[in-house]
Length: 336
Image (cartoon, rainbow, N blue to C red):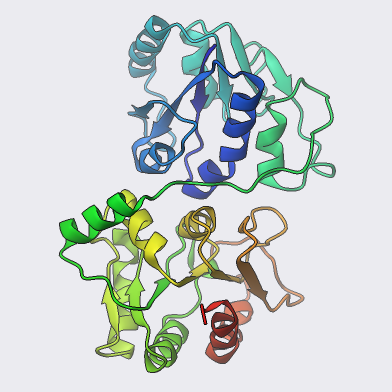
């Protein structure tokens, strides 16, 4: 059997789909599983043992580009896929598999995708509150009960990968590494303040940790603010690594502190000890799926609000989550 995954556009969502891929292989031992994904998600899929080949999608957020979709559909049709699993809910994400004539097109009904998706699942949000559960459900016939338990997502980083990345970046491996991930693509209401990260970095440095800051180029400014507030303490790697390199460096960390972000899910899938900080979002839908993760949330009356910016203007859900609390959680997760 030859099947294609149409991957989500978010790193964290893609990681939460990995247990689905494992279930598909368990059900179909002869399965070859490829993926179609946005360029920025490709490195995550390349670190999954279940994925044979990743085809980079040329489409950005919101682009229709019908001519380009027809060209891509012809390329995919030539590959002879028997089935496709369309993980996003958007109408556009289902167009190329339909145009390619892939016989079995499995996914959620989503944006009224009748015909485009011919094996449709309806989401029972009460029975399946977690995104990882909803994705795993696609391995079953529509309406069937989801077998449990669901394995935690896993991605790979080998010792050879890590040594190569250190060499490429000209880094030496410190004795002890604390990884801090201060960004959150969704918006400021998910970001712990820079001054708090800086205070935490100073405390961790005093206990012998090298502090590496991880993130995309968009996170460079907040990471630089942290570095300036904790002078001589932090190595700002935001924007200085590819996602694949960040995966390898996070795999070297003794523990990681993250906002609710894609890198939080990366660290969890690498099975790193992890402290996660929740403000406007909820761990009830997309928690870090790891036995080594601790979740810190003040659970104020006004949160979770799921807004990109604090609608009340004070961001108490994160401002009042103090560095001392996070430091204590880090010590519990820190290797002895």
